Image (cartoon, rainbow, N blue to C red; front, side, top):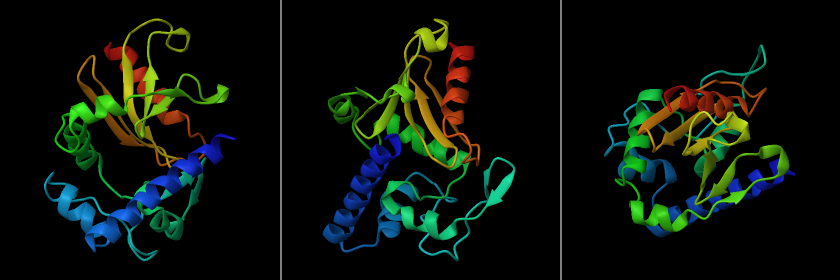
Length: 191
């Protein structure tokens, strides 16, 4: 059931991308470039538009998989290719109120628990909230991680209690929960 919920959310983001294209008269890759990538100096980030664009290798366990057409089809629901440095620039700008005002982020912060198999993750405002300090984190730290991880192993989380940003990519389909567990461990070590 989780994949259905994730698919529904992805469709909503893709619809929003189509609305942006319709309203601006620009292609989504141009909107991203003009209004996000260039202003933030994200020179190594782009939205693939065809299967011929460079798509980094991904893995399912030890098996290398290539899904360039799939990645190029994601568009507004997460199809950007980026580097850790550029993703860090985005994270700092996003959580620092340079892309979306912090007042709007606070208004969107109506988090709902996901299904039982997804505990402790909550979702609201288009991003995940992972509370720390409960049974799942052995009570070692407090606060919450805010951000998202992708099905390919990419992740971007902010830990406001320590003003830390965690970004990266495991390039791995086999265990979608691995980035979340990894970032939770990082937060517990620093908290």
